[in-house]
Length: 412
Ligand SMILES: *[C@@H]1O[C@H](CO)[C@@H](O)[C@H](O)[C@H]1NC(C)=O
Ligand SMILES: *[C@@H]1O[C@H](CO)[C@@H](O)[C@H](O)[C@H]1NC(C)=O
Ligand SMILES: *[C@@H]1O[C@H](CO)[C@@H](O)[C@H](O)[C@H]1NC(C)=O
Image 1: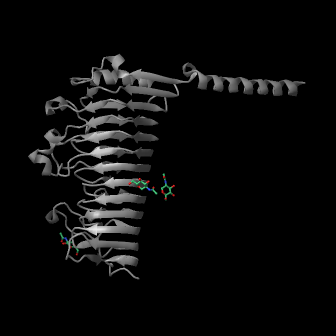
Image 2: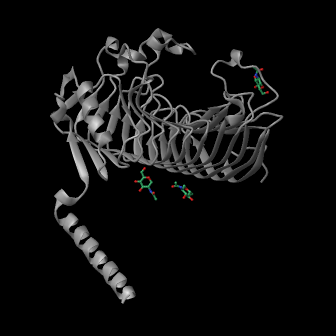
């Protein structure tokens, strides 16, 4: 009897739950998504009035909302001017959805950045389950920052330090998709300390000559996928630096730009580790470098288990590089006995043309060296009629099969 009523209870509860699920799919009112439109918080969207206060007010409600999905709507047909702004968590919902249908522009003058100590124009911190998605454009209006004479200085003052367009710091389980970013003052996107994230179908665009406009900077982050995006910019299309692992990059068209880069590593000593990086099905067009691993002298970390496969180069300068003596200015980096270990690096199914004669450059340290470097089906031809391409190979160990120009320090 007792057993029967318990069974009955569960059966009824089951049907009741089922009913609720069915109802909630029929009637949006029952589903638990809550929507906050920036226009309801006083945002104007004329591209001139500072909409940051309105966005922050809306964000407060988005972040406070306990619903399953909390949505911030940035409506189409408008352009919102934002001064430097920090969207901070933690939030109550684990699905924070920002619908970027409208456009966002940065201030037109530097004075509108004053008082901000952010390294970024738009920052997200400690927001889990953040999705930014939509057809909007984010315009960093970077050109006024690019012209500064102090940019060549290795440690410029804050007034000279251009801000990244978007930074995600400690945002786990994020997704960035479908939008376009143009002309950032510095990088388009910087990821720091994020675990699990997907970047897909973005367009990151800036002039080839704009300084330091990396496409995507990934540091101290894990389990990140970057897919199906177009990156045409002034510096690295994607740069993966210390503390990053399990990074997959596929379907990227890169160029102009400086290619896809791991490093530079070596500034932080033992903790400079990058591992398990997979770059696949990418086209690299007229870039300064193609794919490279660059480490500085000194330090004791690793760059390991890195694969580049199915890469196509079109008139790239310096298509393939492993550099253990990386230095911005050759005179200021003395050679040291320590170096970052580079190992288990595979280049396979790579085709294309080089604008310089040094198509493959493996320049490794004699003490530490590069080990288990594997080339398989790598063919790089000259893009310049009459020019011959060659491989430079110094202290690299591993194998090269079906590869031209062959790195002679590798075994067959
Ligand atoms: C990354 O790619 C590797 C090799 O293709 C695959 O095994 C792994 O599951 C991928 N990881 C992610 C997070 O997509
Ligand atoms: C390779 O990347 C291109 C974009 O550059 C994409 O259109 C294509 O579907 C990708 N192929 C595979 C097999 O993933
Ligand atoms: C360090 O050693 C490398 C390889 O021998 C050499 O090319 C480079 O010029 C050296 N750098 C300095 C600053 O001595």
